[in-house]
Amino acid sequence: MVSYRSLNNLVGWIVFLIASAVYILTTEPTTSFWDCGEYIATAYKLQVGHPPGAPFFQILGRIFSLFAFEGPSQVAQMINIMSALSSSFTILFLFWSITMLARKLVNKDGEMTSAKTWTILTAGIIGSLAYTFTDSFWFSAVEGEVYAMSSFFTAVVFWAALRWEQVADQPHADRWLILIAYLVGLSIGVHLLNLLAIPAIALIVFFRKYKKQSIWRILLVFVISLFILAAIMYGIIPETITLFASTELLFVNTFGLPFHSGTIFFSIVLVGILVVGLLFSRRPSKRISKWLYVFSGILGLLFLAESDSAGSLFFRVLIIAFVTGFFILSRKLRALQHSVILSIVFILIGYSSFLMLVIRSNAGTPINENSPKDAISLLSYLNREQYGDWPIFHGQYFNAPVVDQEDGKPVYIRDSSKGKYVIKDEKKGNVPVFDPEYTTVFPRMWNNTDSRYARDYKRWTGIRSDPQNKRVPTFAENLRFFFKYQIRHMYFRYFMWNFAGRQNAIQGHGDILDGNWLSGISFLDEMRLGATG
Image (cartoon, rainbow, N blue to C red; front, side):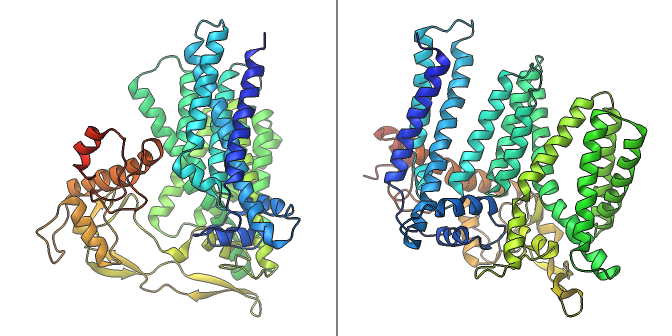
Protein backbone atom coordinates (compact mmCIF):
# COMPACT_ATOMS: atom_id res chain seq x y z
CA MET A 1 0.00 0.00 0.00
CA VAL A 2 1.32 3.42 -0.97
CA SER A 3 1.93 5.60 2.08
CA TYR A 4 -0.13 8.71 2.73
CA ARG A 5 2.97 10.89 2.53
CA SER A 6 3.88 9.59 -0.94
CA LEU A 7 0.31 10.05 -2.22
CA ASN A 8 0.13 13.53 -0.73
CA ASN A 9 3.33 14.56 -2.50
CA LEU A 10 2.34 12.88 -5.79
CA VAL A 11 -1.17 14.36 -5.97
CA GLY A 12 0.19 17.77 -4.95
CA TRP A 13 2.63 17.77 -7.85
CA ILE A 14 -0.12 16.62 -10.24
CA VAL A 15 -2.25 19.58 -9.14
CA PHE A 16 0.81 21.80 -9.66
CA LEU A 17 1.23 20.51 -13.22
CA ILE A 18 -2.46 21.11 -13.99
CA ALA A 19 -2.23 24.70 -12.71
CA SER A 20 1.08 25.29 -14.55
CA ALA A 21 -0.38 24.03 -17.83
CA VAL A 22 -3.47 26.23 -17.48
CA TYR A 23 -1.51 29.37 -16.64
CA ILE A 24 1.34 28.93 -19.13
CA LEU A 25 -1.05 28.12 -21.99
CA THR A 26 -3.13 31.24 -21.24
CA THR A 27 -0.27 33.58 -20.34
CA GLU A 28 0.05 36.96 -22.06
CA PRO A 29 2.45 36.76 -25.04
CA THR A 30 3.60 40.37 -24.50
CA THR A 31 2.45 42.87 -21.90
CA SER A 32 -0.80 43.87 -20.26
CA PHE A 33 -2.16 47.18 -19.05
CA TRP A 34 -1.41 48.80 -15.68
CA ASP A 35 2.17 48.49 -14.37
CA CYS A 36 3.09 45.32 -16.26
CA GLY A 37 5.10 47.08 -18.96
CA GLU A 38 7.15 48.94 -16.38
CA TYR A 39 7.77 45.83 -14.27
CA ILE A 40 8.89 43.87 -17.33
CA ALA A 41 11.21 46.64 -18.55
CA THR A 42 12.77 47.24 -15.13
CA ALA A 43 13.21 43.51 -14.49
CA TYR A 44 14.81 42.92 -17.91
CA LYS A 45 17.65 45.39 -17.30
CA LEU A 46 17.43 45.68 -13.48
CA GLN A 47 16.28 49.30 -13.53
CA VAL A 48 14.51 51.40 -10.90
CA GLY A 49 10.72 51.45 -11.18
CA HIS A 50 8.09 53.41 -9.32
CA PRO A 51 8.11 53.66 -5.50
CA PRO A 52 8.29 51.72 -3.27
CA GLY A 53 9.92 49.25 -5.66
CA ALA A 54 9.89 45.49 -6.06
CA PRO A 55 13.59 44.54 -6.23
CA PHE A 56 13.28 40.83 -5.47
CA PHE A 57 10.61 40.48 -8.17
CA GLN A 58 12.97 42.26 -10.58
CA ILE A 59 15.93 40.02 -9.68
CA LEU A 60 13.92 36.86 -10.36
CA GLY A 61 12.42 38.48 -13.46
CA ARG A 62 15.93 39.14 -14.77
CA ILE A 63 16.78 35.45 -14.31
CA PHE A 64 13.67 34.40 -16.27
CA SER A 65 14.46 36.93 -19.02
CA LEU A 66 17.72 35.06 -19.66
CA PHE A 67 15.62 32.24 -21.13
CA ALA A 68 14.30 34.51 -23.88
CA PHE A 69 16.38 32.69 -26.50
CA GLU A 70 14.50 34.29 -29.40
CA GLY A 71 15.61 37.76 -28.33
CA PRO A 72 14.04 40.77 -26.56
CA SER A 73 10.66 40.10 -28.19
CA GLN A 74 10.28 37.06 -25.91
CA VAL A 75 11.32 38.76 -22.65
CA ALA A 76 7.81 39.82 -21.67
CA GLN A 77 6.47 36.30 -22.18
CA MET A 78 9.23 34.77 -20.03
CA ILE A 79 8.52 37.17 -17.16
CA ASN A 80 4.81 36.43 -17.55
CA ILE A 81 5.69 32.73 -17.27
CA MET A 82 7.47 33.55 -14.02
CA SER A 83 4.13 34.83 -12.71
CA ALA A 84 2.44 31.69 -14.03
CA LEU A 85 4.87 29.43 -12.17
CA SER A 86 4.62 31.57 -9.02
CA SER A 87 0.87 31.02 -9.15
CA SER A 88 1.10 27.28 -9.76
CA PHE A 89 3.52 26.95 -6.83
CA THR A 90 0.96 28.88 -4.80
CA ILE A 91 -1.59 26.21 -5.72
CA LEU A 92 0.88 23.47 -4.74
CA PHE A 93 1.46 24.89 -1.25
CA LEU A 94 -2.25 25.62 -0.92
CA PHE A 95 -2.94 21.95 -1.63
CA TRP A 96 -0.47 20.83 1.02
CA SER A 97 -1.86 23.34 3.53
CA ILE A 98 -5.40 22.06 2.96
CA THR A 99 -4.35 18.42 3.37
CA MET A 100 -2.52 19.24 6.61
CA LEU A 101 -5.63 20.93 8.02
CA ALA A 102 -7.95 18.21 6.70
CA ARG A 103 -5.80 15.50 8.26
CA LYS A 104 -6.21 17.10 11.69
CA LEU A 105 -9.99 16.95 11.24
CA VAL A 106 -10.32 13.51 9.65
CA ASN A 107 -7.58 11.55 11.37
CA LYS A 108 -8.12 12.38 15.04
CA ASP A 109 -7.54 8.83 16.27
CA GLY A 110 -4.16 8.55 14.52
CA GLU A 111 -5.07 5.54 12.35
CA MET A 112 -4.84 6.38 8.66
CA THR A 113 -7.08 4.26 6.43
CA SER A 114 -7.52 4.30 2.67
CA ALA A 115 -10.90 6.06 3.01
CA LYS A 116 -9.41 8.76 5.23
CA THR A 117 -6.46 9.20 2.86
CA TRP A 118 -8.66 9.85 -0.16
CA THR A 119 -11.03 12.06 1.84
CA ILE A 120 -8.09 14.28 2.76
CA LEU A 121 -6.61 14.28 -0.73
CA THR A 122 -10.00 15.03 -2.30
CA ALA A 123 -10.39 18.03 0.00
CA GLY A 124 -6.99 19.28 -1.16
CA ILE A 125 -7.81 18.71 -4.84
CA ILE A 126 -11.17 20.49 -4.68
CA GLY A 127 -9.89 23.41 -2.62
CA SER A 128 -6.71 24.04 -4.61
CA LEU A 129 -8.28 23.61 -8.06
CA ALA A 130 -11.24 25.79 -7.10
CA TYR A 131 -8.76 28.55 -6.30
CA THR A 132 -6.80 27.80 -9.49
CA PHE A 133 -9.72 28.95 -11.64
CA THR A 134 -10.89 31.93 -9.57
CA ASP A 135 -11.27 35.13 -11.55
CA SER A 136 -8.73 37.39 -9.84
CA PHE A 137 -6.04 34.77 -9.19
CA TRP A 138 -6.07 33.51 -12.77
CA PHE A 139 -5.96 37.12 -13.96
CA SER A 140 -2.77 37.79 -11.93
CA ALA A 141 -1.20 34.47 -12.95
CA VAL A 142 -0.79 35.36 -16.61
CA GLU A 143 0.78 38.83 -16.48
CA GLY A 144 4.06 40.39 -15.34
CA GLU A 145 2.80 41.88 -12.07
CA VAL A 146 3.83 41.39 -8.44
CA TYR A 147 0.58 39.90 -7.13
CA ALA A 148 1.22 36.35 -8.32
CA MET A 149 4.58 36.19 -6.56
CA SER A 150 3.13 37.89 -3.47
CA SER A 151 0.45 35.18 -3.35
CA PHE A 152 3.20 32.55 -3.57
CA PHE A 153 4.97 34.02 -0.53
CA THR A 154 1.71 34.09 1.41
CA ALA A 155 1.02 30.44 0.57
CA VAL A 156 4.51 29.19 1.41
CA VAL A 157 4.65 31.19 4.67
CA PHE A 158 1.33 29.74 5.84
CA TRP A 159 2.46 26.23 4.81
CA ALA A 160 5.69 26.70 6.79
CA ALA A 161 3.64 27.73 9.84
CA LEU A 162 1.62 24.51 9.57
CA ARG A 163 4.84 22.50 9.19
CA TRP A 164 6.14 24.12 12.38
CA GLU A 165 2.89 23.16 14.10
CA GLN A 166 3.54 19.51 13.28
CA VAL A 167 6.99 19.47 14.93
CA ALA A 168 6.60 22.25 17.50
CA ASP A 169 7.65 20.05 20.43
CA GLN A 170 10.75 18.67 18.73
CA PRO A 171 14.27 20.10 19.09
CA HIS A 172 15.15 22.88 16.65
CA ALA A 173 11.51 23.30 15.59
CA ASP A 174 12.01 27.06 15.62
CA ARG A 175 13.94 26.73 12.36
CA TRP A 176 10.55 26.87 10.66
CA LEU A 177 9.81 30.21 12.33
CA ILE A 178 13.22 31.51 11.22
CA LEU A 179 12.41 30.39 7.68
CA ILE A 180 9.11 32.29 7.91
CA ALA A 181 11.00 35.43 9.01
CA TYR A 182 13.34 35.13 6.04
CA LEU A 183 10.46 34.63 3.61
CA VAL A 184 8.69 37.66 5.08
CA GLY A 185 11.86 39.69 4.52
CA LEU A 186 12.09 38.54 0.92
CA SER A 187 8.41 39.22 0.33
CA ILE A 188 8.92 42.89 1.24
CA GLY A 189 10.93 43.09 -1.99
CA VAL A 190 7.82 41.96 -3.87
CA HIS A 191 4.76 43.39 -2.11
CA LEU A 192 3.66 44.11 1.46
CA LEU A 193 0.51 41.97 1.15
CA ASN A 194 2.40 38.97 2.54
CA LEU A 195 2.54 40.64 5.97
CA LEU A 196 -1.19 39.96 6.34
CA ALA A 197 -0.32 36.30 7.00
CA ILE A 198 1.19 37.26 10.38
CA PRO A 199 -2.11 37.21 12.36
CA ALA A 200 -2.88 33.71 11.03
CA ILE A 201 0.61 32.51 12.02
CA ALA A 202 0.21 33.99 15.51
CA LEU A 203 -3.07 32.09 15.98
CA ILE A 204 -1.43 28.84 14.82
CA VAL A 205 1.31 29.33 17.44
CA PHE A 206 -1.28 30.11 20.12
CA PHE A 207 -3.47 27.06 19.46
CA ARG A 208 -0.40 24.81 19.32
CA LYS A 209 1.36 26.04 22.43
CA TYR A 210 -1.50 26.90 24.79
CA LYS A 211 -4.15 24.40 25.85
CA LYS A 212 -6.23 26.87 27.88
CA GLN A 213 -8.17 28.79 25.26
CA SER A 214 -11.00 31.27 25.44
CA ILE A 215 -12.49 33.90 23.17
CA TRP A 216 -10.74 36.64 25.16
CA ARG A 217 -7.34 34.97 24.85
CA ILE A 218 -7.89 34.48 21.13
CA LEU A 219 -8.76 38.17 20.77
CA LEU A 220 -5.68 39.10 22.82
CA VAL A 221 -3.42 37.01 20.57
CA PHE A 222 -5.03 38.60 17.51
CA VAL A 223 -4.32 42.08 18.92
CA ILE A 224 -0.72 41.08 19.68
CA SER A 225 -0.34 39.81 16.12
CA LEU A 226 -1.49 43.20 14.84
CA PHE A 227 1.21 44.82 16.96
CA ILE A 228 3.78 42.46 15.43
CA LEU A 229 2.46 43.34 11.98
CA ALA A 230 2.69 47.05 12.81
CA ALA A 231 6.21 46.59 14.26
CA ILE A 232 7.40 45.16 10.93
CA MET A 233 5.41 47.45 8.64
CA TYR A 234 5.91 50.72 10.55
CA GLY A 235 9.03 49.80 12.51
CA ILE A 236 11.58 47.53 10.86
CA ILE A 237 10.77 48.45 7.24
CA PRO A 238 10.79 52.28 7.42
CA GLU A 239 12.75 52.93 10.63
CA THR A 240 15.81 50.97 9.50
CA ILE A 241 16.15 53.18 6.42
CA THR A 242 15.20 56.28 8.46
CA LEU A 243 18.13 55.62 10.81
CA PHE A 244 20.44 55.07 7.84
CA ALA A 245 19.27 58.39 6.36
CA SER A 246 19.49 60.44 9.57
CA THR A 247 22.96 59.05 10.38
CA GLU A 248 24.11 59.82 6.85
CA LEU A 249 22.82 63.39 7.13
CA LEU A 250 24.50 63.81 10.54
CA PHE A 251 27.89 62.54 9.37
CA VAL A 252 27.97 64.45 6.07
CA ASN A 253 26.27 67.77 6.87
CA THR A 254 27.29 68.14 10.56
CA PHE A 255 30.63 66.32 10.78
CA GLY A 256 31.75 67.16 7.23
CA LEU A 257 32.61 63.56 6.35
CA PRO A 258 32.35 62.07 2.82
CA PHE A 259 29.12 60.78 1.33
CA HIS A 260 28.01 57.33 2.57
CA SER A 261 30.17 57.60 5.73
CA GLY A 262 27.05 57.70 7.92
CA THR A 263 25.60 54.73 6.05
CA ILE A 264 28.78 52.71 6.64
CA PHE A 265 28.86 53.68 10.33
CA PHE A 266 25.25 52.71 10.93
CA SER A 267 25.77 49.44 9.05
CA ILE A 268 28.59 48.60 11.50
CA VAL A 269 26.41 49.52 14.49
CA LEU A 270 23.44 47.51 13.22
CA VAL A 271 25.47 44.41 12.39
CA GLY A 272 27.36 44.77 15.66
CA ILE A 273 24.28 44.87 17.87
CA LEU A 274 22.72 41.91 16.04
CA VAL A 275 25.87 39.77 16.25
CA VAL A 276 26.55 40.67 19.88
CA GLY A 277 22.87 40.17 20.72
CA LEU A 278 22.97 36.66 19.23
CA LEU A 279 26.13 35.82 21.15
CA PHE A 280 24.71 37.23 24.39
CA SER A 281 21.44 35.29 24.01
CA ARG A 282 23.39 32.05 23.59
CA ARG A 283 26.25 32.52 26.09
CA PRO A 284 25.87 35.59 28.31
CA SER A 285 29.15 36.97 29.68
CA LYS A 286 30.45 40.28 31.01
CA ARG A 287 32.69 40.83 27.97
CA ILE A 288 29.81 40.32 25.51
CA SER A 289 27.42 42.40 27.61
CA LYS A 290 29.84 45.36 27.52
CA TRP A 291 29.77 45.36 23.72
CA LEU A 292 26.02 44.94 23.79
CA TYR A 293 25.71 48.05 25.97
CA VAL A 294 28.00 50.03 23.65
CA PHE A 295 26.21 49.14 20.41
CA SER A 296 22.76 49.41 22.01
CA GLY A 297 23.61 52.82 23.46
CA ILE A 298 24.76 54.14 20.07
CA LEU A 299 21.68 52.73 18.35
CA GLY A 300 19.42 54.18 21.06
CA LEU A 301 20.98 57.64 20.75
CA LEU A 302 20.60 57.60 16.96
CA PHE A 303 17.02 56.41 17.35
CA LEU A 304 16.17 59.23 19.77
CA ALA A 305 18.06 61.88 17.80
CA GLU A 306 16.02 61.11 14.69
CA SER A 307 12.73 62.08 16.38
CA ASP A 308 11.32 65.33 15.00
CA SER A 309 8.64 66.13 17.60
CA ALA A 310 7.81 65.64 21.27
CA GLY A 311 5.27 62.96 20.38
CA SER A 312 7.80 61.11 18.25
CA LEU A 313 10.40 61.33 21.02
CA PHE A 314 7.92 59.94 23.57
CA PHE A 315 7.01 57.09 21.21
CA ARG A 316 10.67 56.20 20.69
CA VAL A 317 11.37 56.25 24.43
CA LEU A 318 8.51 53.78 24.89
CA ILE A 319 9.98 51.49 22.21
CA ILE A 320 13.42 51.54 23.85
CA ALA A 321 11.84 50.83 27.24
CA PHE A 322 9.86 47.91 25.78
CA VAL A 323 12.91 46.36 24.10
CA THR A 324 15.03 46.83 27.22
CA GLY A 325 12.30 45.31 29.36
CA PHE A 326 12.07 42.33 27.02
CA PHE A 327 15.75 41.52 27.56
CA ILE A 328 15.68 42.15 31.32
CA LEU A 329 12.47 40.25 32.08
CA SER A 330 13.28 37.32 29.84
CA ARG A 331 16.84 36.68 31.02
CA LYS A 332 15.79 33.13 31.83
CA LEU A 333 14.33 32.68 28.35
CA ARG A 334 17.53 32.84 26.32
CA ALA A 335 16.06 30.63 23.61
CA LEU A 336 13.20 33.10 23.10
CA GLN A 337 15.62 36.02 22.91
CA HIS A 338 17.81 34.13 20.47
CA SER A 339 14.89 33.22 18.20
CA VAL A 340 13.55 36.81 18.21
CA ILE A 341 16.93 38.31 17.32
CA LEU A 342 17.56 35.63 14.70
CA SER A 343 14.15 36.34 13.17
CA ILE A 344 14.98 40.06 12.96
CA VAL A 345 18.33 39.19 11.35
CA PHE A 346 16.68 37.08 8.66
CA ILE A 347 13.96 39.66 8.01
CA LEU A 348 16.73 42.22 7.40
CA ILE A 349 18.66 39.79 5.19
CA GLY A 350 15.57 39.33 3.03
CA TYR A 351 14.86 43.06 3.12
CA SER A 352 18.40 43.76 1.86
CA SER A 353 17.20 43.12 -1.71
CA PHE A 354 16.46 46.87 -1.77
CA LEU A 355 20.22 47.48 -2.00
CA MET A 356 19.81 46.50 -5.65
CA LEU A 357 17.83 49.68 -6.27
CA VAL A 358 20.60 51.87 -4.81
CA ILE A 359 23.28 50.03 -6.79
CA ARG A 360 21.40 50.26 -10.07
CA SER A 361 20.35 53.87 -9.47
CA ASN A 362 24.01 54.84 -9.11
CA ALA A 363 24.68 53.02 -12.38
CA GLY A 364 22.40 55.55 -14.12
CA THR A 365 19.88 53.20 -15.71
CA PRO A 366 17.49 54.72 -18.32
CA ILE A 367 14.50 54.04 -16.05
CA ASN A 368 15.56 55.53 -12.71
CA GLU A 369 12.43 56.79 -11.00
CA ASN A 370 13.16 59.10 -8.03
CA SER A 371 16.86 58.19 -8.36
CA PRO A 372 17.37 56.56 -4.92
CA LYS A 373 21.19 56.81 -4.99
CA ASP A 374 21.75 57.10 -1.24
CA ALA A 375 20.04 56.42 2.09
CA ILE A 376 18.28 59.81 2.14
CA SER A 377 16.72 59.52 -1.32
CA LEU A 378 15.97 55.82 -0.70
CA LEU A 379 13.94 56.79 2.40
CA SER A 380 11.85 59.22 0.33
CA TYR A 381 11.44 56.49 -2.30
CA LEU A 382 10.28 53.84 0.18
CA ASN A 383 7.92 56.26 1.94
CA ARG A 384 6.27 57.04 -1.43
CA GLU A 385 6.38 60.73 -0.60
CA GLN A 386 5.48 61.71 -4.17
CA TYR A 387 2.02 60.16 -3.69
CA GLY A 388 1.10 62.33 -0.71
CA ASP A 389 -0.44 61.15 2.54
CA TRP A 390 -3.84 60.05 3.81
CA PRO A 391 -5.25 59.47 7.31
CA ILE A 392 -5.52 55.93 8.67
CA PHE A 393 -6.17 56.01 12.41
CA HIS A 394 -7.23 59.65 12.85
CA GLY A 395 -7.93 62.43 10.41
CA GLN A 396 -10.31 64.71 8.58
CA TYR A 397 -13.63 64.23 6.84
CA PHE A 398 -13.93 65.09 3.15
CA ASN A 399 -15.50 68.51 3.90
CA ALA A 400 -13.12 69.56 6.68
CA PRO A 401 -12.05 73.22 6.32
CA VAL A 402 -8.34 74.01 6.50
CA VAL A 403 -7.61 76.36 9.42
CA ASP A 404 -3.81 76.51 9.24
CA GLN A 405 -0.73 75.28 7.41
CA GLU A 406 2.25 73.62 9.06
CA ASP A 407 5.72 72.96 7.73
CA GLY A 408 6.55 69.49 6.50
CA LYS A 409 9.88 67.67 6.51
CA PRO A 410 12.39 69.31 4.14
CA VAL A 411 13.51 67.31 1.11
CA TYR A 412 17.29 66.81 0.82
CA ILE A 413 19.28 65.96 -2.29
CA ARG A 414 22.96 65.23 -2.72
CA ASP A 415 25.10 68.12 -4.02
CA SER A 416 28.46 66.69 -5.08
CA SER A 417 29.97 70.13 -5.73
CA LYS A 418 29.33 71.24 -2.13
CA GLY A 419 30.07 67.84 -0.66
CA LYS A 420 26.88 67.73 1.39
CA TYR A 421 23.13 67.29 1.22
CA VAL A 422 21.19 70.47 0.42
CA ILE A 423 17.50 71.25 0.82
CA LYS A 424 15.63 71.02 -2.45
CA ASP A 425 12.19 71.75 -1.01
CA GLU A 426 11.69 73.25 2.46
CA LYS A 427 8.04 72.15 2.50
CA LYS A 428 7.02 75.46 4.06
CA GLY A 429 3.29 75.56 4.78
CA ASN A 430 2.95 72.19 3.10
CA VAL A 431 0.89 70.31 5.70
CA PRO A 432 -2.77 71.40 6.09
CA VAL A 433 -4.28 71.61 9.58
CA PHE A 434 -7.99 70.78 9.57
CA ASP A 435 -10.74 72.04 11.83
CA PRO A 436 -10.75 69.59 14.80
CA GLU A 437 -14.57 69.51 14.72
CA TYR A 438 -14.36 67.84 11.30
CA THR A 439 -11.92 65.10 12.34
CA THR A 440 -12.53 61.60 13.66
CA VAL A 441 -10.88 58.34 14.55
CA PHE A 442 -10.79 55.75 11.77
CA PRO A 443 -11.67 58.24 8.99
CA ARG A 444 -13.11 56.52 5.92
CA MET A 445 -14.58 59.53 4.09
CA TRP A 446 -11.56 61.83 3.84
CA ASN A 447 -10.71 62.57 0.20
CA ASN A 448 -11.43 66.20 -0.77
CA THR A 449 -9.38 66.36 -3.98
CA ASP A 450 -12.40 66.06 -6.29
CA SER A 451 -16.09 66.95 -5.93
CA ARG A 452 -17.09 63.50 -7.21
CA TYR A 453 -15.75 61.95 -3.99
CA ALA A 454 -18.10 64.10 -1.93
CA ARG A 455 -21.03 62.99 -4.11
CA ASP A 456 -20.08 59.35 -3.70
CA TYR A 457 -19.63 59.62 0.07
CA LYS A 458 -23.06 61.21 0.43
CA ARG A 459 -24.71 58.70 -1.89
CA TRP A 460 -23.37 55.66 -0.04
CA THR A 461 -24.16 57.05 3.41
CA GLY A 462 -27.57 58.54 2.53
CA ILE A 463 -26.62 62.18 3.31
CA ARG A 464 -29.14 64.29 1.38
CA SER A 465 -29.58 67.56 3.28
CA ASP A 466 -26.15 69.11 2.84
CA PRO A 467 -25.77 70.71 -0.61
CA GLN A 468 -22.94 73.00 0.57
CA ASN A 469 -20.97 70.22 2.31
CA LYS A 470 -20.98 72.10 5.61
CA ARG A 471 -22.47 69.53 7.96
CA VAL A 472 -20.06 67.43 10.03
CA PRO A 473 -20.66 63.76 9.17
CA THR A 474 -21.47 61.57 12.14
CA PHE A 475 -19.31 58.64 13.15
CA ALA A 476 -22.27 56.37 12.40
CA GLU A 477 -22.26 57.66 8.80
CA ASN A 478 -18.52 57.12 8.68
CA LEU A 479 -19.01 53.48 9.69
CA ARG A 480 -21.95 53.14 7.29
CA PHE A 481 -19.66 54.04 4.41
CA PHE A 482 -17.06 51.59 5.70
CA PHE A 483 -19.46 48.63 5.91
CA LYS A 484 -21.72 49.48 2.97
CA TYR A 485 -19.10 50.53 0.42
CA GLN A 486 -15.66 49.30 1.51
CA ILE A 487 -16.74 45.98 3.00
CA ARG A 488 -19.93 44.97 1.19
CA HIS A 489 -19.44 46.55 -2.23
CA MET A 490 -15.66 46.54 -2.64
CA TYR A 491 -14.60 43.48 -0.64
CA PHE A 492 -17.50 41.06 -0.35
CA ARG A 493 -18.68 41.67 -3.93
CA TYR A 494 -15.15 41.11 -5.23
CA PHE A 495 -14.82 37.97 -3.13
CA MET A 496 -18.08 36.58 -4.49
CA TRP A 497 -17.03 37.30 -8.08
CA ASN A 498 -14.41 34.61 -7.55
CA PHE A 499 -16.44 31.99 -5.72
CA ALA A 500 -20.01 32.52 -6.93
CA GLY A 501 -20.53 34.41 -10.18
CA ARG A 502 -20.47 37.79 -11.87
CA GLN A 503 -23.37 39.68 -13.41
CA ASN A 504 -21.28 41.12 -16.25
CA ALA A 505 -17.81 42.51 -16.97
CA ILE A 506 -18.79 46.13 -16.22
CA GLN A 507 -17.35 47.49 -12.95
CA GLY A 508 -20.58 49.14 -11.83
CA HIS A 509 -21.09 51.78 -9.16
CA GLY A 510 -23.59 50.16 -6.84
CA ASP A 511 -26.61 50.02 -9.16
CA ILE A 512 -28.51 46.78 -9.79
CA LEU A 513 -27.56 46.42 -13.45
CA ASP A 514 -23.76 46.21 -13.54
CA GLY A 515 -20.95 44.43 -11.74
CA ASN A 516 -22.91 42.63 -9.02
CA TRP A 517 -22.14 39.14 -7.84
CA LEU A 518 -24.62 36.43 -8.76
CA SER A 519 -25.21 33.07 -7.15
CA GLY A 520 -27.02 31.63 -10.16
CA ILE A 521 -30.02 30.83 -7.94
CA SER A 522 -32.73 33.06 -9.33
CA PHE A 523 -34.86 33.70 -6.26
CA LEU A 524 -31.80 34.52 -4.11
CA ASP A 525 -30.43 36.95 -6.70
CA GLU A 526 -33.84 38.58 -7.13
CA MET A 527 -34.08 39.13 -3.37
CA ARG A 528 -31.00 41.38 -3.61
CA LEU A 529 -31.27 42.86 -7.11
CA GLY A 530 -34.86 42.44 -8.23
CA ALA A 531 -35.89 41.01 -11.59
CA THR A 532 -32.97 42.40 -13.63
CA GLY A 533 -33.09 39.77 -16.39
